Length: 367
Image 1 (tube, helix red, strand yellow):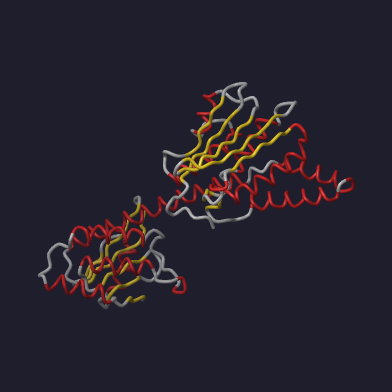
Image 2 (spheres, helix red, strand yellow):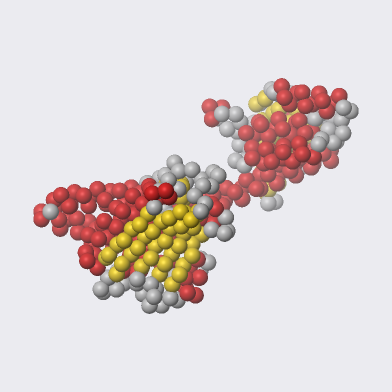
């Protein structure tokens, strides 16, 4: 049994509640506690090892105990020991097991254990000991179940974003890798210094593309990978690829989602230059516009039908538009629906992809 002793602030609040004759907790305090409980239960009801810091499930139990003014409150998943705030009645653990086994409310004396359902599936139990009205205990159980469901939805969204990032990392073109290595090999005897530099560029390109990283990097960090890629692409394509880069120094520290810029530059080279026998040019620019950073990647390639571009950003375009779709979705998820990519294109008129992001965004910090 995990027993959590009550901290002094919670004890003082409970005494104040009783001194004032009970009654309904202030709505502001309830809302604040509800938000905190939802955050505590974001990871589910499983206990966390003590060496990882305070157990958030135990914190949620303490907050619920304060709100219900119960002698004890316990939270448990379907297998582990309950996290108790306060000292439960002797029969509490037996009732927890009964509620888990039967999937129904179990009660004896002043203790009630309520099963928690998330999307119709058992998720755990809430145990309440003390003189607490049963309707209040049921509302608390509904509250906990809703918090668990939100946590699962957030976890699903996070997993989907991580899967998209893995898919983007897996998009490294075997054709490009083969050509890059073949080109490097051709310089080993004739120009060993250049071969060595290209090997370093290749290592940086691979490291940035496949290494596990945090969620964010700086524009400067992303641009180092772009430079490595362009050095390899120029070695492979020779005079067919012309590059112009203009990045204002004041936007280099701007934090971006990892792999936000490099795939756009690769897309411009692969679809804007390589498809033309005579080659073409790629221009990359970045500047500050007020509180925003605006990055543009432009090529003079064959372009595309604007309807195809719209389908790409909607996720319904051809398979080779995965990079654009992925980057656009991640930008909108991080900064909001008003951000993302804008594609300016027409058949025979090249393509310009514009990325607009805030220069400073709470919670977006490069690792």
